[in-house]
Amino acid sequence: MKGIEISFRDMDHSDAIEHQIRSKASKLTEKYDEITGIRAVVALPHNHSHKGKIAHVSLEIGLPGELVAITNDSHDKHEHEDMYVALRDAFDKAQRCISKIHNKRLDTKRRIQH
Image 1 (cartoon, rainbow, N blue to C red):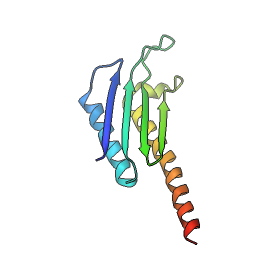
Image 2 (image 1 turned 60 degrees about the vertical axis):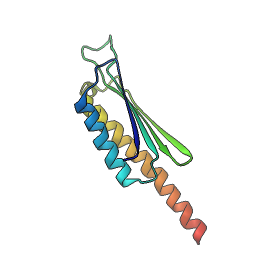
Image 3 (image 1 turned 90 degrees about the horizontal axis):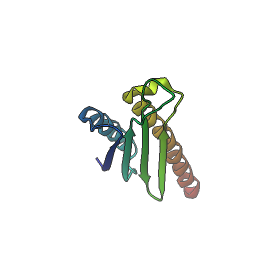
Image 4 (image 1 turned 180 degrees about the vertical axis):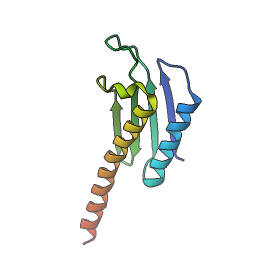
């Protein structure tokens, strides 16, 4: 897999979460081989207005000439108290964004060739 950097903030390192991130990143890079690197930051900051901690997930995905930034820090989504749900949602959002960019690039190439 291409380069991946994983950071944990306001929480201890978790092998299980790191494995989940690497697995999802691997699937993304298999589908879109133009990805040059992925940086993932996961955090469980203190949320004083909530009883539980809401997981924050940020992704930066490098593409040639472009950086896709995904921030998944929905304070009102209580399902994001589960880090795995927050990771799933962040990678799903990243996949949609990269798909749009990928399809635009393919469309532009097709137009140039015709």
